[in-house]
Length: 141
Image 1 (cartoon, rainbow, N blue to C red):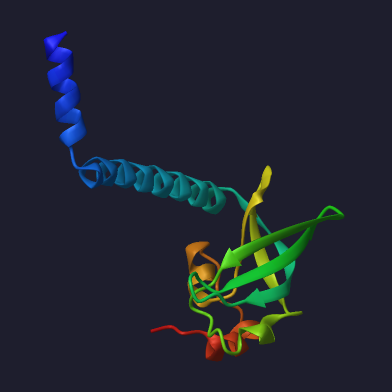
Image 2: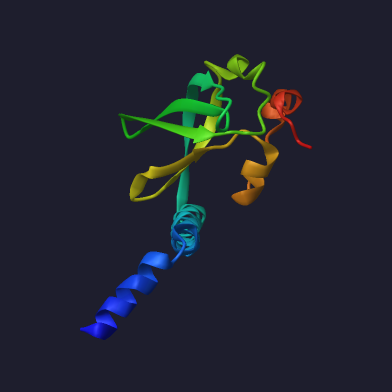
């Protein structure tokens, strides 16, 4: 019983941030690995659909975002993506424009809209000349 009391006293003395920091690091690592796996599944087994930008939003605390829809076999899907490299002051100009959407075959919830040249490169797709107008909207630095 004396050992339990001593252990209890020691645990109470542990600085909470010292304990919480490793937990947060492990949590961040798990989320990162899960996100990488999801992205890897998408890149290895995808198809392309036509998507339409429905809304562009800017948020001072997080990345700029795009809400979009795309259709597969007559069914309409709605999704969103963060696009921090789109200039927030003029990003609303994307609303109503069509862009390709890469979606995972068998899991349409795993998708992304291809706007920037880097997005196309990730999927080993040439950036189309028809989208060259978007480059002036991107913060590529």
